[in-house]
Image (cartoon, rainbow, N blue to C red; front, side):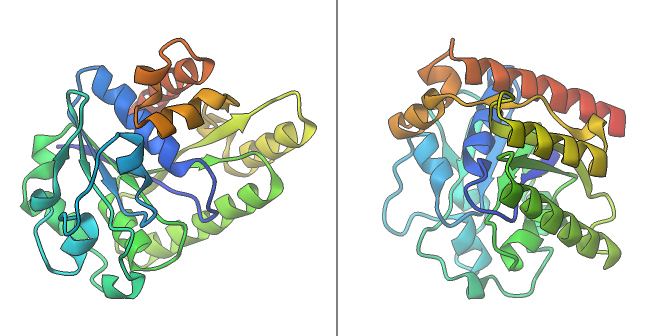
Length: 255
């Protein structure tokens, strides 16, 4: 049965998609079967994997609109073990409807949870049926954040959404896996303050080692490649490898 985690932050521009792509690619490089599901209508995961989508390509959003199955939308990437269910950048969020567990049901019923070792779900920052579907399908939530005040507030808003999902009985197994600082520079006082604040509020054990500021992250996305394929010796590549190791350790400790 696959481990399913959501990559989420209520604030946009928090490094969600770059983290989702690079963590998924790092896991796949270790021989795992990884499925990346892109619920964010910016459709950045396909860009980060260099996957060209044609008009009317099945997506996770056309699945939610009742036009195809999830399996119909599967796209193989260039990297062994890593597949994508892409997003539709033209999707109207209002079409997601109120079937909050539809994604979870399809992952199970279509056998995808048995076919993959890990399923990572990139999410939109908006609070709507897309985010709730992702949270209802997941075991854990990974929260990337840029260490400044507004991102810290986005983390706190997301925590309230998680409580709402849990308290309504929609997903009793949902837990916060950890918080991942991105574009981190501990020489900057504000970065240290925000990190310390989140560690105090949620527990230092949930704060993952950070991803240092590195232009190679943006360059890799522009090239349509995961960071480890574009710049295997970059410092952010090493940081994502360390983050995956920490994610595995945290997950095991939380079970």
